[in-house]
Image (cartoon, rainbow, N blue to C red; front, side, top):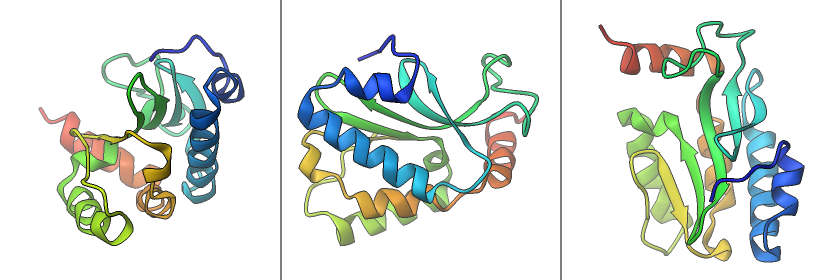
Length: 151
């Protein structure tokens, strides 16, 4: 569900208590494990982690005025979502799918880059922390340019 919040704290305050706790914990895990250089923002109605224009002046190819997105965190109507753009790349996706069974007894529910959690208690916070630590800003720029900006 898209939010009009202008800050991550404001976004979290608008959530129901069970979602508030889960999103707060996910945010804390992401911020603790995310390599230096990413910036926390509100974007597309979600909490986002981006590569700012100071590191990547070209911005997002869909809208160069926007910073390059990497991870988004959202409370959707029927689930909590972690959108991790780095999962489009095969090696990280395969690693994540393999590790999932070591961290959860639930079936993995995901789209191309969206990991969905129907219940807050099903979130494997340690695995999410490990996932977000795997790609530096420079590695994401290289992956992004080679995968999305092919000519």
